Image (cartoon, rainbow over all chains, first blue to last red; front, side, top):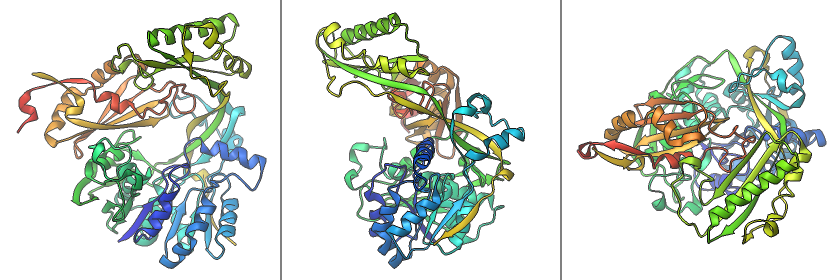
Length: 444
Length: 111
């Protein structure tokens, strides 16, 4: 049995979590997931400005902080902190924690190969919309193939203390230690799928141990000290999900089910670079306090195509808010919206979309929101997006004047004029697997 | 028959994949799963969310977990960073669905 913990569900997750996982009890592997879908584009920009950047900058100081414990307890770290510059990340780790052995996995970055792929006739259509990539070719900011668990396991096999990858499937971080320790083969579809299921359960960190959980949430103990999840994996693919004793939060089968269903499509075909997992074959059992056992997972062969994650510039956007109080708060907010739209129209400004929400009324649930009668206050939030940056900038000057020129009692403009933000959009596409060649390098 | 909210028999979690919102819905008890199957249909879910969901609704069954996965297409105003919504990732749509009214026979709720 090996213990694999996840101490980071996204870049920006709780900084104390990985430290507490290392301190709070036995683990063999610490995984850390830093990369959301559009994080790569931010990192690509940072590398363009400075060739020594382009990775998750929280990672090297964290490793510095826990290096002594990693060595004493023989804990290995597997993280996708490398972003678009795993080698620079590894060098920064070695600076923060001299003496650790650090390996990187390379080959996911295909930004420089887009034209080569187009030349070979790969259309790289958007998986969601069906549009060919040629429609956004000149706006592409980053392009990375999702790599699987085997290259990460190869990096662990070098004896590295820290394995740094760029874009890889999130759950692959968790499956790699299983391959490394149990010797699973690429044809072990059921076992790999079981590993993927276990990885999916813990890849969002505390979201399977009591965080964002509807199950009797008022009585989940001590969320302030929530314990991050640990998978106890067996060589046959079965596993238990648990957390360190004495930590807050709660692990039971209902909470695990919530996470299992989180952000999935067809549960019979959960596609990954290493296998296609069937979530409908999983059995879950509550086997003790804060302990859920999973077994019975089946799966099929890996797909012929790898998913690639690309990002592109898709225009500009801004959002402004104002608050109106009782009486007639909602009516005043609606009039403010109408006036703003009329003024934008009179200025001849064109946007791809203008969207208005009323906080306290319908911002979250839209038309499905429960009706509100005579609220004491309402915040109106008006947002625009479009390709013309000047039009979006002009919009940001149209909200605050309403305080003196619109319905009575407008307030809440203290943060000033809204900010114009670039829209970096996500373009998922498929690339033939044989085009992606990964390699492992130990960094000195 | 009586009307009850979904929250009486199930809990949910929701998130995004591009412009698709997903809602996982889990029966509190195995015996409530047939009610979910009968009452939480794609048509009912689409009607409940109204113009929030511009596309169709798909439903997948996980009888092993007494759960369903709902996919709401074109439900997030373009999705991800393009969306102008506060809840661009659909994190609260699962909670919204808890209020949907369904029809049950009182005997289905007790043994």
